[in-house]
Length: 604
Image (cartoon, rainbow, N blue to C red; front, side):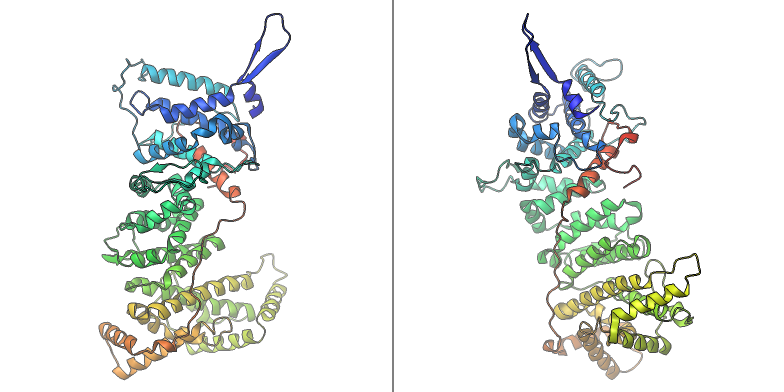
């Protein structure tokens, strides 16, 4: 049934006796207003809990016509009614109520707590009335086959909070009307803290106040769900009042740790959830205060981090470890350029404020860079000399495990150095032309095979981009906070042989100047100190050398700063995502999967 056909069920015609004319009245708009009144005005009690759930669910169903269109709907009947007319005055009150429903996470009333006598099926009298009305509505709302779920959905602690959050996300992502912006998005963008006594500008419609402390606590506790992470993203990105409040919190670890855990378990999460978590980190790292404060928060015994026992580590160092692990997973598995670009952008934003990096975090920054330096030389060799069989290069690459851990005993041989020198010499002459010719030669040599050749040129471009960004991150840390990070200098010196090979690379020559200067300066001091130095002694020499290194010898580069900007037409991503969450998470609602057009049923 189309939305227009549905509207006919809510069209009332009154005919005068003996008259052929009739006046029709559209009751659908009035019904939507009544639902909004039910949600916002009825106090939440045991006997009204189910009424609130049913009213919210009914609004979700009214808007679900989007599910049955491949393209994003710019206009619909329900859309039109919610944007203007009698429903519009309820905008801020509805958004506020839905937010508070999410914040409170009220559980459904226990059986036997109803004021009215129980019916035989266990529901109260009022619940029976609500369910009866709802069942009647579901019979009418056959948009794509809405009805009872075929299988029982998992029990949720708070069905009301879940449905409220889903409806809030649906409303927030409605497209703007041709003549007016989405009022629900305006309300989400402008609400303030209850402790903020300043008046709202007259230019801001649909404004209201809410308790930010309660909102922050709920967001921290609920990040296991996609929809809570999407709400957090929406508030951080669109509401400057919320963003300012969160960045000023002294317990940011309560928010950041759940986000890091999402990224750490990337294999178990859908790609959209990972994207949202990553973009949240990117938005947070745009703030220098955040980047400084996370290195002052010391965490103990991070049980979910299994690669290494972390008895004590700063929140900043843990963030670095998780982001690098996410990049590594992406580069070896999904190879999603958007994902690794945003990961690197978050690290770059933080780099100037790196403080007292944990030795493992410093090691991972350097070892991850080295992994790609080795991979780069290996791919160059395959690209220029496809028929060669350099066992040293093969060994250097294959000795690296999937999770990025390197064999610490693996060092670059003189063969690898000579290969690198000759290949970089070619690149410095005519980089793009050489790549093109080598790729064509490789493809021509295997044209008789049914197996397509690896696209080494594309691999090389991606690896070069990652290396460049990692070198800039290392350089930014050395330039701005060298004296705070002896562990990073130690890790850099340990791998200096590999970095020294890239001093003359045409793409990295400029950024290598400071890194080469630091390596040379501290290497000479270690030589003066003698051989067979302990780790503690090396770190002591580094700390002393930091004071002696003239800061003016380090070349200044523009500060690394990346800002998250939504793509053009973000609704093309968010509307299918939100409705996939509704489809998979809404309590007591079912849509026939064969009729879903907005997204593929096997998508995340």
